[in-house]
Amino acid sequence: MAKKGWDEFEIGAMLRTFDGKIDNIAATQQEDRAYSQSSSYTASVADWRLIKPVFNKDYCIDCQFCWIYCPDVSIISRDKKLIGVDMDHCKGCGICVEVCPTNPKSLLMFSEQADEESVIANWPKKDEEEA
Amino acid sequence: MAFDKMELKDIEVWDGNFAAAQAMRQSQVDVVAAYPITPSTPIVEGYAKFLADGYIEGEFVMVESEHAAMSACIGAAAAGGRVATATSSQGLALMSETLYQASGMRLPIVLNLVNRALASPLNVNGDHSDMYMIRDSGWIQFDAFCSQEAYDLNFIAFKVSEDHDIRLPAIVNQDGFMTSHTAQGVKTLSDDAAYGFVGEYKPMNDMLDFEHPVTHGVQTEEDWHFEHKARQHNDLMTKVMPKIQSVFKDFEKLTGRKYNPVEKYNMDDADVCVVCLGTSVETAREVASDMRAKGIKAGVIGLRVIRPFPFFEIAEALKNVKAIAALDRSSPNGAAGMLFNEIAGALFNTDTKALLSGYIYGLGGRDLTKAHLVALFNELQANADAGKVTTKLQQFIGVRGPKLAFL
Image (tube, rainbow over all chains, first blue to last red; front, side, top):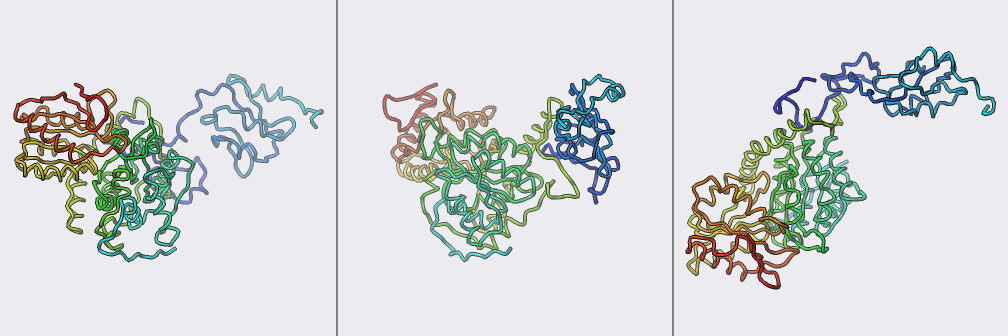
């Protein structure tokens, strides 16, 4: 964001989420919304993440638990189907993994450097004891 | 939800607390979040009763502390409502963190601060320690010397605070017990006239405007924080005083009661003068008149507006005085008193030859008697005659034990 002088911005350390007026925002997908420059939607706020969730769609039952519980709205769901994780906003807290009810889990935490394809290829098998 | 209007007599016998509660009712405050504390309790109790009896359309939020009370007020103000509360002393101390939030977020909240001493030792009586403690918090501060003024200044505070060029919270001070619990005749406004003066609340950047979503209470680090604080200080220094002056004028037009940032009494030809706050102003005025009969040209200055500090107005009012006493009802704990320092700052770099001395008095509700003030005016006259301050620069009035004097 441009560095403005003290007299060049709105009072009150107040930030607008959108440029101008919004209408029917609930029915507009995030990527189609006119987020302002000051909205954190357009900023990466995840650079201090150490571990990341990896999503394996083969086991997902689309229960939406992860979407509901994610404290940063970083689970991307479309038409009630989980399609991925927003890595610009995910802080790596692991709550999505914790609440995932499938066996094996459809989301697991790996180090930030882990290669997604290879961890999916080596995904843990069903835990027969738990089942 | 409709509400009933209340028929008031032209003059009602109210104490400062009830006068403030009535002003909050007549201003139709939307939200009061409060945690009761002596001696301010009857203000929020009064609002709650008016609300329960159907005289207000609003919400009373019961909270678990003063910190929570101001936090709820901040939320309600950011949502877009007319908001007020009241507190004293320890309650204000607990609130102090959120006071800076309210002013930095530029939210117009009116806080009735019923001045009371700060512990320790615990004390419920009136002094100005709480008022002084938060003087750098970015709030506008008015000072009432009696119940009538506590009533009037509430309307004035809403009108100044909520103006879109101002948008800063305001405190209306009144002395604990001496004003808050002393019933006096108060000239009233009708409900319609009072609400007409304060006006409909006009929201700005409110969170309930769903078509323009906003985030309040953001974080800024070294790259932005300074600019926001500079903006707030600039507005306090340049915009607030002219707005207060114009609202004072409007209020005089409506009621005939004239307020000034610096209230002068017998100052036109005064040789000696006392500068003080709260109920002490009225006592000092009475003694100043008595002193005139004894040949001492005594005057009194009471500060109606404490923040923003009326720097030029007070320098102007004091320019021809020979000896000035700054009376501080708060222990400076290791420095000169606040009024002493502010007045010294305002007079330094001017041509005045005035002699300035400071006095600490009335802590924990100790009376400031007429005898104290007679002795004080005589001491000021002695200073004026000698052409120098004949005492130490800081003295204590009315404390038991060996005489205390410093600096």
